Amino acid sequence: MFPYENLEVYKRAYGANQKVYRLLKGNKTIPGYAKDQLGRASLSIMLNIAEGSAKFSNKDRKNFYVTARGSTFECAALVNFMHDEGEISIELKLELSNSYEEISRMLFTMIKNLEE
Image (cartoon, rainbow, N blue to C red; front, side, top):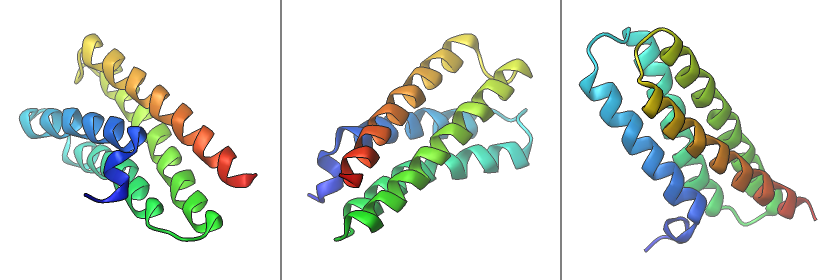
């Protein structure tokens, strides 16, 4: 087992990514460019957490977690937009938005702890 697999923030990002993956795979009405952007941003959260956990220095680890947090904000904005455009149900929007808020808070704490 890799160390990142034990991180709660990674588990949350993985779960959110699964929901996004299923949404994008099953929805044929979302334009390709929007699917691509949300898919890449969602993967970016998960993958930057994983890659950051492998870094030896706090500075390097922090940079990856900052990038993951930025991608979290990007996903939240895309989900809000897609909901307003009628592509995502209110239930899925709320579920993903809550996940992104939680992931963002967890990453923020991790980043702050690396600064000390």
